Image (cartoon, rainbow, N blue to C red; front, top):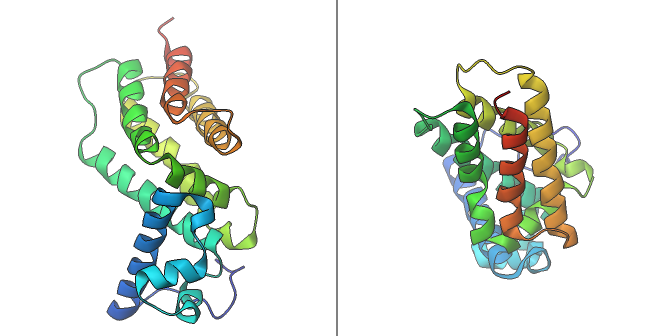
Length: 198
């Protein structure tokens, strides 16, 4: 986060600051779910959260910064959910497919939100650079949860390919080349192809 303007509030936050930041994240999530990327302006988010626009800018330097932090938050929640209830007792292929489908199931429920967050993530602006590590490690963690101790050849290559499939399909959502339901289907196809028993 070293590329962020100096005035942006950095952790650790006081309880009051943490609560304000949470309200801003929740407001952005609600606005993006309802109206997509265009509905998330810093002034609109601030008003929805019950704070002033200058206060919102103390926490987030732009709408893209705000939206990628919503994305990081949701990815973290997904990882916690998958970790607390991992799939067991199935083949590596079936566990991977079930886990990946669970990981992306909310895309169909809130496509506007996921398109908005992806648009922010791929913007390339310096204030979203901190999201890269969280996003690039998420699929690896999900696949590792699914595969567990199973012996799988070229595990690193398989994870990298599944990461690329997920990213490509999320970009496809933004460009209109993919429908929300396609993301899970394409991940399943890739997982079954990569992990099929030989």
